[in-house]
Image 1 (spheres, one colour):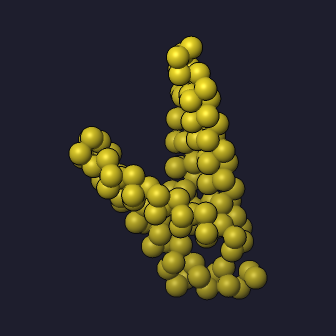
Image 2 (cartoon, rainbow, N blue to C red):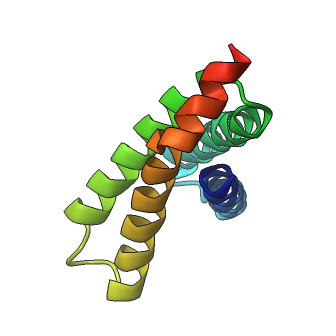
Length: 115
């Protein structure tokens, strides 16, 4: 439940980033801006669907959630010098909690019962 909630929040954040990206298009950055904005929105849809799947006990949601958290950890590590410490900490904390929530024995048992 906690992991699914965190992933849903991450998905909503990506919706916001995607909308902001598309709203700030300029003539010079139009193609790249549209590509990035659409990618953010598509990734957000995947995360929201995976969070819903976890809440419903569907096992397919684990893979995208775990992959997204590993990507998030990598981005936090790579950009740790450029990002504010609080943001870096939030990225790491939410990713670690989400991973622990997905691999927790109670979660694994619940998902195993549903299959």
